[in-house]
Length: 122
Image 1: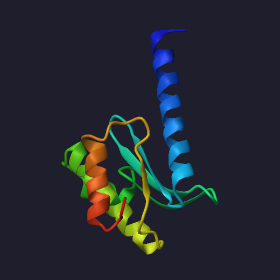
Image 2: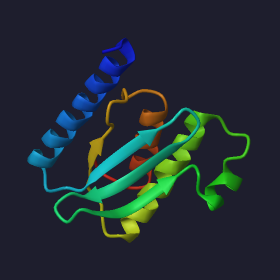
Image 3: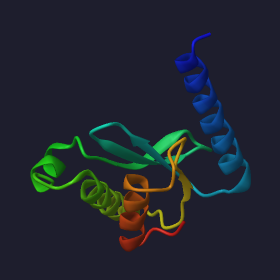
Image 4: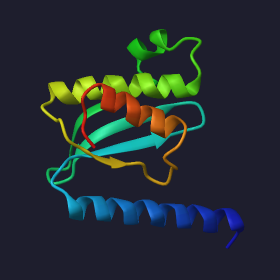
């Protein structure tokens, strides 16, 4: 197995382990983050029913116009704020934060701060 494959497998294992712990601990919906090199997406997922309650992404048409010229950290904060507003409309106020394999740093932290400012409780 190549080094890259081992790294990818280890990363998937960490993410799976984290999700298991989050599901077992709480009745709250899970706020799941996906971060690519250029974009960021986030969803509030009810694992008991297997449904997405709210979502936001930097790829949405209405968001793209508003983020023109911003750096990636500011974009993440804006996406977090948008998700917080949408989650409030869906009746969600408390969530479990699932950062996946990403460190709680930079864009992931900015997204969480934006969601908190919009009224979500972690």
